Amino acid sequence: MRARPCSLFFRYLLLVVLLAPSGSAQQLPSFEPLEKAVRDELAATRAPGAAVAVVSGDRVIFAKGFGVANVETGAPVTPDTVFRVGSVTKMMTAAAAVPQAEAGKVRLDAPVGSYVSGLAPTVSKLTLHQLLSQSSGLKEVPGNDGLHGEEALGAFMRSLKDEDVLVPAGRAFSYSNAGYALAGYALEAAAGKPYADVMEETLFRPLGMARTTLRPMMAMTYPSLAMGHDASGEEELKVVRPLADDTRLWPAGYAFTSLSDLSRFVIALLNDGKVDGRQALPPGVAAKLLAPRI
Image (cartoon, rainbow, N blue to C red; front, side, top):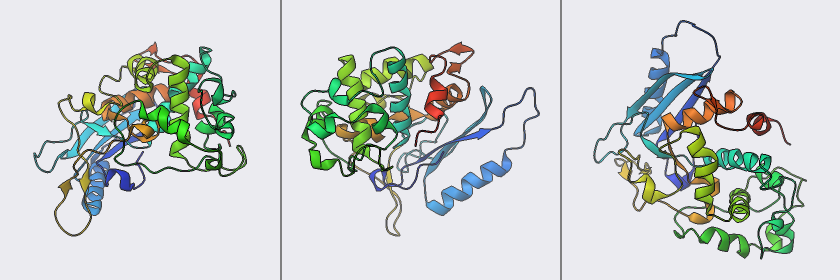
């Protein structure tokens, strides 16, 4: 899955997962055309590197890094290189919300005001289902480099006003980073612990996603971290400094993960929550996540 171009991440290094039909004991195809396509894409977009995997059934049949994670150091991209993956984070937030609902800790059809105090009246009536299905009508909020303290997530939610719900909930599909941020904060408020901890306990740890985190100070400790690069103009690529971070919107677009970890997430979605032959997510959760909503 290739993220759409996003100014927030300055054409950040691509993290790609391709899905292949499952089969038992099939002869593996040649991946040379795929590798050529990746190299051609990198050349065409001036992206410094990519990580690519092919998942078939319940296993990874191809995983490879291309190019570099940092043009200054020349560090190669590998399947374990950690990328900030932008709006792929939204899938992760939704994938944590459904198990929380299955455990009775939240209700997807309940107003978020049931869990979050101090919201504007119209905002408080929005449900997790509406927020996660992008049908809440809540305005879009761009992010880039904002506040860094984790308390900023809750403060931002309480700063939203009634008029920030642009159309009545359920009337239209309207993409909203703020909507996913509110969904993530509702999980935080219901659990009584930071959103990043809810994600770790509900999703990352059960799936064995050992190099996946929301916290930049954790991501920077891993052996290889892909940097954002600025490709504007005709000059050479430059590493973007400082690293973009905005805790107001962590649930919408700020997760760090590796190709190896993201492949485990994909395998769980394709196999009713099972990874390595064990039930990592409750049965039925994957089907609910993949079911049409709007």
